Amino acid sequence: MSAPARYLEHVERLADAIASGELASGTRLPPQRDYADAHGLATSTVTRIYTELARRGLAVGEVGRGTFVRSPTVGAAAAFAQWAPAPGTLGGVDLAFNYPVLPEQTEALRQALREMASGGDLSALLVHSPHDGPPADRRTAAQWLSRRDSVAVSPDSLVVCAGGQHALDVLQLALCRAGEPVAVEALTYPGWKALAAMRDVPLAAVSMTADGLDPVALDKLCRHHAGRLRVVYTMPTLHNPLGGVMPLAQRRAVVEVARRHDLMIVEDSAYGFLVADAPPPLRLLAPERTFEVCSLSKPGAPGLRIAYLIAPPALLPRVHAAMRASVWSAAPLMAQLASRWLSDGTMDRWITRKRALAAQRQAIAMQCLSGLNSTGYPGAFHRLVPMPASMPALRCDDIVAALQARGVAVTPVDAFAAPGQTAPSAIRVALGSPGSDDTLRAALTQVADVVKAAGRH
Image (cartoon, rainbow, N blue to C red; front, top):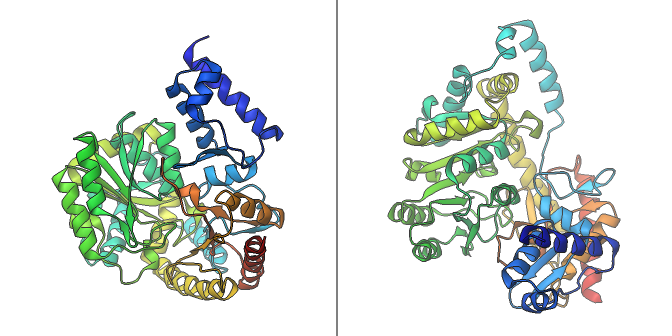
């Protein structure tokens, strides 16, 4: 039997044992060398087996302790958190995802569609648009982003993508190569991790300060990889899940390291709209090497599926080629709808409302989670809840499963852990999706009850 076949045979055998309950959640898998000796495998093959189980959400590795089985249901939530529906949320309360939609947005959509149908050139929406998006939509987006940053953004540097995840996909296609490492924060976006896993792009973790990516650690990592590290992905403005906002001095230090080692920077600004007084984006500090992704899923609505990717002019041809290879161009109808809301002030009004809503829901969360040492940015749509110190590390999975049984979906923080990193034993509660404050309050009360009960046992 070939090596790939043997590797997959062991993966499937272990996956079946986990699914059937033969290997229960929390079971410690044999040390890799022991497993290799018992089955006549190379240790590197066992590493690959355990890594694939972790990628599927069926196992979790802890530095110094080993690899442990996790519940398939909880593992699925961890593996796909933030970019696919969580198991068990239908009919329950979703505290796993942040898709804040305001009540007035439905009527705004209805009105916008009426106006679009009654005027303009609808035939233009039925044909392919340029790879970087219709020129009028790029101009509108550039004007809106220029107001945001108080610095002019050229429409020629902007690409209209089919949502933030698509923009990240385009950037990995344009910038990353299989086998070449990409630097990420120790806790990073699961959607970026999933794309990298599909492309066999290894992720190299950079330790973090309280405010985000540590430039000293990034410099050390670059020296370790001696020229093979070419890209760093980061969330400097309202980090997900930690909620930090990187100060200006730290941003400048990150840029200095990037220039010293000729790194390209991918700046994910998914939650940046919630910070009214944020320092300038990394793109403004290093425009020659920074790609910024500005999604409208959170400030607008997830169904809009529009994001703006701002790229260095010299590197735009690679981005355009990746667009052509992936989706050709974003849907002209959605791009035009987004432009309408950007130009008439609707998006700005929603952002003002959502900032107020986030602050209001943080206050509710702090009240409901009192005594649990939860942490979060005052204007964010998510908060971290640490597990009681008396609990074994793996019991975080039990908390997630217990809440799922009560109809409340949350995200274990290890969903965000970069490969080889041990995440804090905590859960992330998302505050943006419940339709009312009362629904949120009831769900957070369930979270508090389950976590406190676990701490008493």
